[in-house]
Image 1 (tube, rainbow, N blue to C red):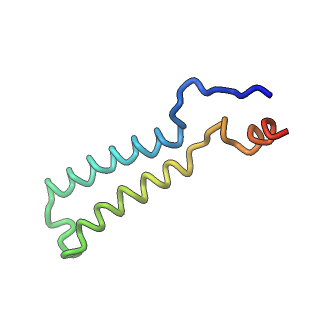
Image 2: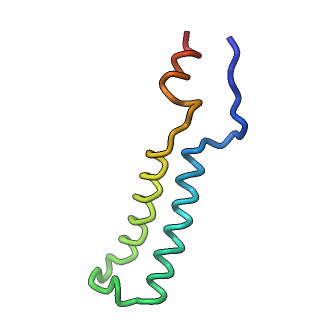
Length: 80
């Protein structure tokens, strides 16, 4: 049985989540710096909302991105 090695050891899912997280961090920080009153209604929960926005966005990006080497058909080929 031969194993297929990816061109890069980092999964595209991880890259998508990382890039999205970085982008959302910049966006949330910029909005907060430019218009601090935008999230004023959240009160003490504002930092939690910032973190949740980045976490949910990163998770969603990683989940939506496909990884051909870890798809069901590729795993089935290597299991047989």
